[in-house]
Length: 106
Image (cartoon, rainbow, N blue to C red; front, side, top):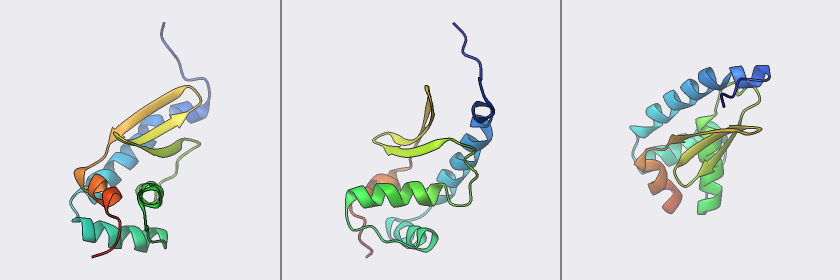
């Protein structure tokens, strides 16, 4: 059975996924310390534990990205985009896992 988009939000998956993938690529080149600094600057928050790190990473990845109704969350494999029954996970760079494991600035 082929699923077809049933509302305008579904049609925006490709541009939202591409924008977030570009942000992931941009942030992937940073060290853990540089990522911590960048996340703090872009979200105006510092993470002090793994749960906070996951939230600020999602906020940093979506910084200035129009989500068009898509929800973005952290999962063990990366960044999940979801809307109703549709879901897509974009792999996160290794530096994200390092930051979640130790979000404190060095």
